Image 1 (cartoon, rainbow, N blue to C red):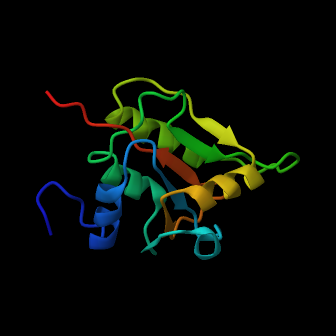
Image 2: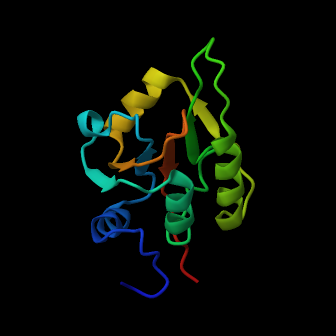
Image 3: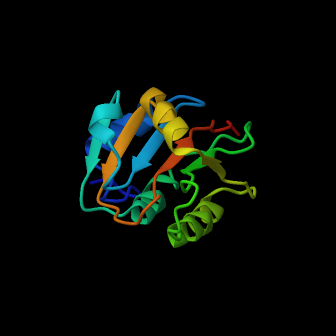
Length: 144
């Protein structure tokens, strides 16, 4: 355990977050996401919801301020009538930790999978909300 680091961030996840560089991406995949078959590096966070993980990660993880959308969501498939209230929760959480208002990008499902394959890591979560998958693009920490 460390001061200031949420106890839901495992040692493995902390290592991954530290290793990532500017513009590297991490995917937080819901319980239905094919994480194992898509991941270059897989981190297990079974039993944890993505909003809880966002609240744990974002205090220590700068989002990329040099791109229009450092946060990407898996878009709802055309014709699917599912609602995505978890996205509103994500927006509130990101706003707490990211000083500038940003637009979330919606990425078509199969394009999202391709991007996930190239991501630095995928976190497999216990999130049960549909279309809850999210990609975070890492930014830089400016020296003072």
